[in-house]
Every structure is written in structure tokens, then in C-alpha cells.
Image 1 (spheres, one colour):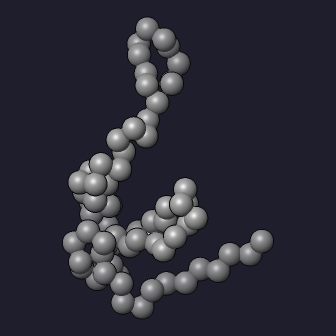
Image 2: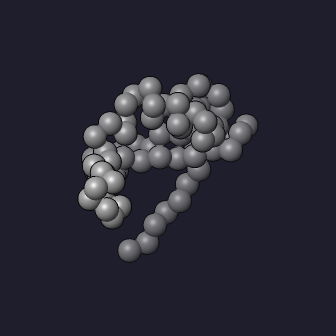
Length: 72
């Protein structure tokens, strides 16, 4: 299977609206939902803020207790 990589011409950050190539761009796809259209972020700070504000980590971690031992 081959993969084609392309870069957008003039994409804006999904969080702050800045041009992504004026910074350190990151491309994110949700591949749990058929790898839809990518979202572009101008840097990790915008990605983290977007994830936090949209509650995208809620319920996505294993439960851990010091009594159980092990990572999860």
C-alpha cells in the first residue's frame, strides 16, 4: 500500500486561525472515524488548547490505582 503526502497551500490553524506555515504546523486526523479530513494546528500549544477546550481526552484513559499495580 502506498501513501501520498501532500501539503496544503494556505491552511489556517483550527484553533487560533493563524496561517500554519508561519509556525511549526501539526496535522491531525481522526482515524477512529474513517480518517476524515485533517485538522491543522500551527503549533502544539494550539493543539493542546483545542483538545482541552473540547474535552477530547475525557474517558480516553485507563483507570489506575496504586493498589492494583501495573500501568493500567
